[in-house]
Length: 388
Image (cartoon, rainbow, N blue to C red; front, side, top):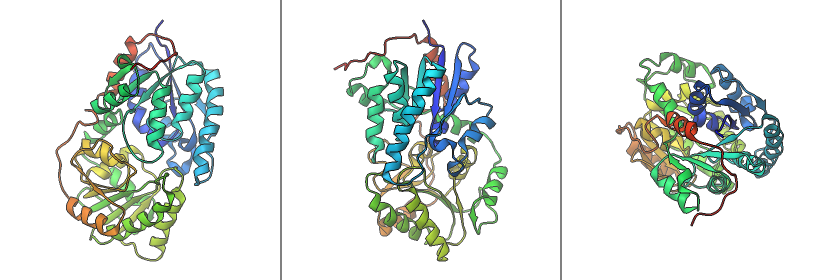
């Protein structure tokens, strides 16, 4: 019997951007019944109105979860995951999918894998096998061990998943589906609408922004395994970016524990009048975010976007600290420690550089590749065993 019902669980903005092309491709195929479940931070306005963006893209939401625990402490990630397991168990019991997709490595994603695997539902995992810092490193490999089908982003990741004892016949190197969306976006020639939109939202003294302006994009997320570092690091980043005579677009951190402390330090820096020629935005839909970073003079912070999107777009980036420790990267990324001196020096080296496009994380056809694999896939036992 072939797989019919495919359920995509979206629990954050990052989840949606990284699985959107796969949803689009499976929806085109009449054989599949596509189910979309949305919960956690993807349901909150604070983190980008993701559920509204999904609807605007013409994708029906079959089930909504109220699973985000409202706190910025470490307890929030544990409780959000626990609430997610309970809520998703009810969800899967109602929707009865044949296959559930869990995306990436954020803490919420393990709730999807636990609930589905415990209910004898096949689990497909995208972007497994990568190496980074923070709790994501542990979550990612744990999800791999709970999953039955692995859609990895590169050969390096495929080898690592197989070394974890997974069946090599169920590991597929398809690239990162996020690059499919990036590829779609950058085919557009004129981004005036997008830059005008960014100029009008958020807070700050930038009245206009265009692709011809000199500007930085800063995006710094919490390092959850060392929360004490976050306050000092974001202060050093803010001091560093203001040394350059450019516009600064600063994007709010994600929903991980410690995000409120980072946001607080950004506000303090602004309220003390130390920021000029700036714009602070809480979140940007990917259609606006990709043109913004593509034409920036440097992407600064610790987001995987600098490594994944940045390599595909060939933009200069400075990665700060150990949140992306050892993640496979292209030469567009320069590593910095958390000190102000190092950050400033690395930005100076990267300022305005141009890099050739890299297909390190796929060439923008991942959704089609995954669809072709799913079309041939038949139901099989959820019982797993180590293969080494």
